[in-house]
Amino acid sequence: MLVADDQALVRGSFRVLVESAPGLTAVGEASNGKEAVELAARERPDVVLMDVRMPELNGIEATERICADPATAGVRVLILTTFDLDEYVYAALRAGASGFLLKDTPPADLLTAIEVVAAGEALLAPSVTRRLIAEFTRQPEKPRLPATLDDLTEREREVLLLIACGRSNSEIATQLYLGMATVKTHIGRLLSKLGARDRAQLVIAAYEAGLVRPG
Image (tube, rainbow, N blue to C red; front, top):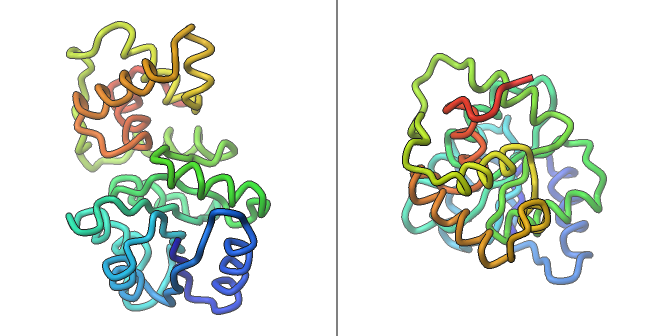
């Protein structure tokens, strides 16, 4: 993974944490968004741990460039945020970020989040998801995802609703009495039908289409 933060102490702390975990390796550090984009293109990390406020190019713009470039389309971006940066998180999700966490997240939870995002799932901090999505749906910018679920089957709607509620694949499988392979198939079809990049955008689509109400 790649660590992008303008504070050297923070970058170093995250790197030490990552390299202490089995199966995780830090491939570099970026002190600004421009460096993050360049390193992502060169190193092709599985995950970029991205700060928002950075010089030269902020984390949102860097995320958008990484996610829009076909060469780095497979790179997942995990945004670190605080409550007073909510507006940046909405923009990050639109830019293609796979999720966000609060900066005071416990180390063990951060490592788990990195693994979850690297595996292709989205991660939205439970303590702020409802507030963020509620505000996100009130943003004046037109949504990029279809605001209709007409093409979805009833089962796909059920899976989408559970995704929007923050359920993992295993939890969805248990609740709907489905096998894991079947759940993954439904999610793949949802991504295709709704033109979504990942689970984070499926959550957005569910709220924009009115399947889930904020609050």
